[in-house]
Length: 246
Image (cartoon, rainbow, N blue to C red; front, side, top):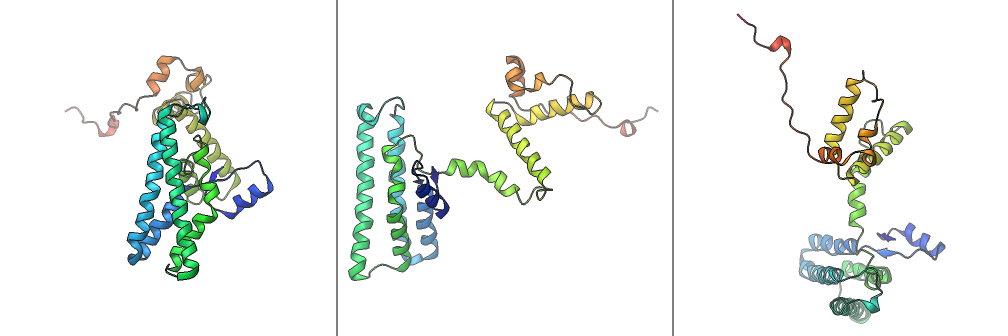
């Protein structure tokens, strides 16, 4: 489970051994960036760690270009193995660097409190942060999931009627409907316009035959049509606004 460092996830993994937590590198990176903005005298030190994290992302991206998901790590091609080794070495160097700093801190007390806090967090979550190294199918962060949750997350308090159960059920249906349309490569605006137009032509009622609006029942030509943006409509002036004949 790719996740942030919320303690609820950690407790869940303790109770269910089958769950493996893969902690998000974007959250770790954010720790250093936030500290760089808040502590100007530590900015260079913090950004140096940001560069190290960027190197991990780069090496993993290079590795994934060569990855064959049908093969084990041992049977991947040579290019993959080279990138994989480079990633493992970079990860080990990062571990040795923070471990050395924390060990020296016990005697010399050279680090600021915020530095110790971030490095201790890195150390405490290191095992979960390293899951992606031996499991290329695991992403380094949960950005994709968080981005897809942004609209529902923001809307739960902003949508009209969001405090009622009917509104929540309606929102769930709409999210499911439009996500299905997107997964089939259709244009939601075009699809919705055609559907509402069919309802209007049927006296304000749903069309008696909804097959033209169900992606897996559409003809290929229909899917091609609805995959394109809705053509711009030319508004017709109201009769009362049309110029009168002399």
